[in-house]
Length: 102
Image (cartoon, rainbow, N blue to C red; front, side):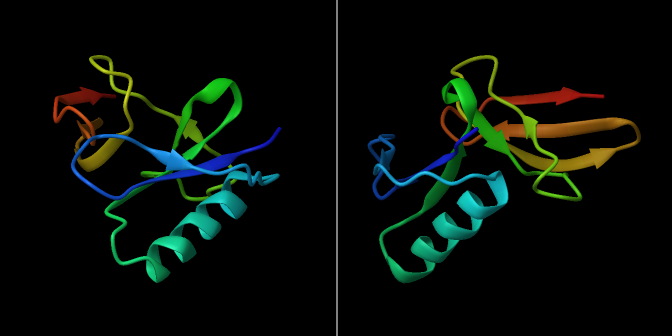
């Protein structure tokens, strides 16, 4: 499996990436976070896994044990807002819709 990285640098909603690939989601996450630390215009980052799905690291104790999570409205990446009891609450980074699962 290979993983790619993408960044957002403006409010257009477009994601930008290059041809670099990584063998693990953790390696890709480390690379894109390093890039975001060097580029001042980056405001969002994501890792793209197999079949073009976004890798969600929120709540995972080990980034190598990933959970794929995407918004049911737009397919964008969900950000973990927090947990209450057995429910995890998310907000989509792209469209802002909120959802819960548990």
